[in-house]
Length: 269
Image 1: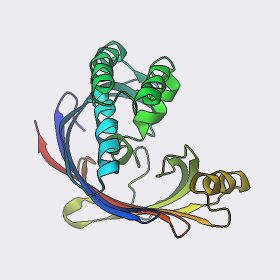
Image 2: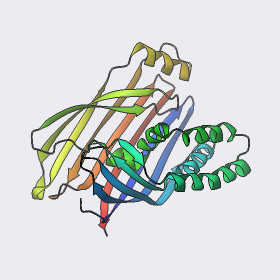
Image 3: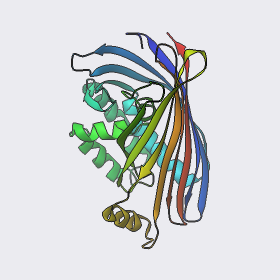
Image 4: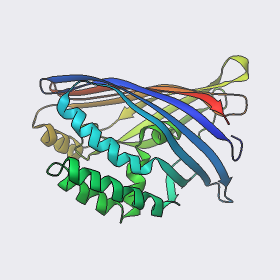
């Protein structure tokens, strides 16, 4: 990736959720610019990331749409991020905190006026997050673009090379349970001198995790299921050209979600 050039990605996310008797399809389209600013002596890298467009193309359930509207408004305070990540893409520092806090004041006014009752606890949560940078790091790490773009950062692209590593994934139903997943990835040469990297996952649920997930959906006998798999393609310069992966979670018969995330490099400026 060349320094100080803007790489523009189009990301499309679609899927289906089920919560008790309500089933909803959703589609989201996001355009994001990422600029590689510098590489530090310890291997950390600094990036500027700007969300250019965000469109909720489809969301069928009215209640979930309202929640999504509030969530998206809160996430808008992170539309511009100046961050340093380590060689595996984990956020180490946020450099534009003052800008983020200014944007939050605008969003807080909107929440207070538009959703005064529903947003009370949400506002308190965000206020706490903005005083504890480690929680900001964690939440930003799960934002759609950052999660997908940095997912395989630092892993070898060498043909036949096998990588085993661990990642944390949040429960998709908002319980706050962190699901540790084991990722197995393998590289191979693709067409026209490109590189392909595929991966799949394994999850070992601890008894405490199962207990908390059961309590979250009030199903005390269900067995949770979670899986991820996908592929990444890199060009000759080892710049990300394309990524597509799926996430599936089931918490018994009444709660399930399946989503597919696709990202394409559409322009370099």
